[in-house]
Image 1 (tube, helix red, strand yellow):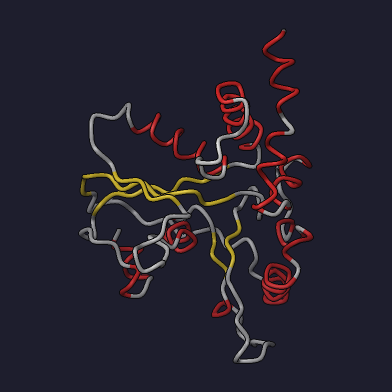
Image 2 (image 1 turned 180 degrees about the vertical axis):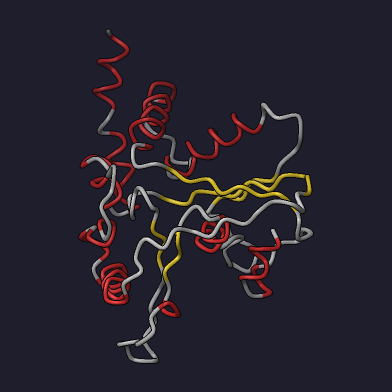
Length: 225
């Protein structure tokens, strides 16, 4: 926790002592097929339509999976998912910073560019890159354990984009061309999202419920067989 709190501003610090043990939860590229679609099919089978009171199925299936895993523990943990906000509408946790300080992914930001080519007034957001999956992954949550680990050794994240020109290209692709997916392939990757998952993510949130209900015939076929 101390690594995270030292890297964020006061509004985002979490109220735990520095040596508190935390874990970052990352979804692999095939999460849609292995977790999200089974959750959607189960919901459609039980309710007929995807229930409008539920959150996005990615968030909801992640919540259920995290609860299932942590309920097996003999200790109480706190889980903060990436979409959760404080009462003042700030993110409860900056997951990209958490991913970086954990050593799981590298968070590339404007401050990593030595010769900044952009207008000083222009907002340039940073992005995390995974050493095996590039940009084909997501940071979903952190888990905070009620235990102290003062001797835990810090892992420095792999610098998979050491070249300055490539870092500039990454930030430009992420900030201004993110819809075409190219920033995710800034390094060679082992696995990518399926076309079905890409279609789902590219669909406007307001239109996703219609897409979810299009799965109903498949659910009926599965149930019939």
